[in-house]
Image (cartoon, rainbow, N blue to C red; front, side, top):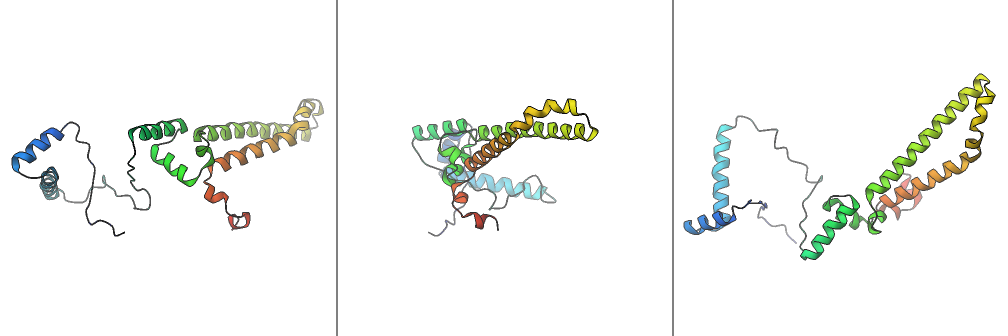
Length: 190
């Protein structure tokens, strides 16, 4: 399909629609024509006053973001917005993650909950790391009696680290689009 040569922009009129329609009818032109003329006049007037381009209006690269308008029933729209709120995402990010097949979103989970679980588990791992560092320091100094307090921690160390790695792997897999998960492991490593 060939792209349209028409440029479009949506504007929230904030209650000015009735006045716009009335003025357009009085002038015998369409509302779009009236808005285009008013905009062209303003841009011409603004261009005369500008000496250099404003940095205030920087244009994003087209590849960074794009607008997508979806037409759906009001119930479907409300359900989509509610699901995005429950997931802790903007509507656009929510729809993008649904399309990408992110398991956490497909299963009704919250992106933020997965990230929070990872952060909390990493905090526990940091505590474990500090404890091991302190134990190593005690052993180097020959302080065996205080080091014995860490015996129970050492007995469960293997299980604690494996539990952390399993939780991290699951959470990260649930946050990653399925299209990335489908690739064989050797392709991901290159």
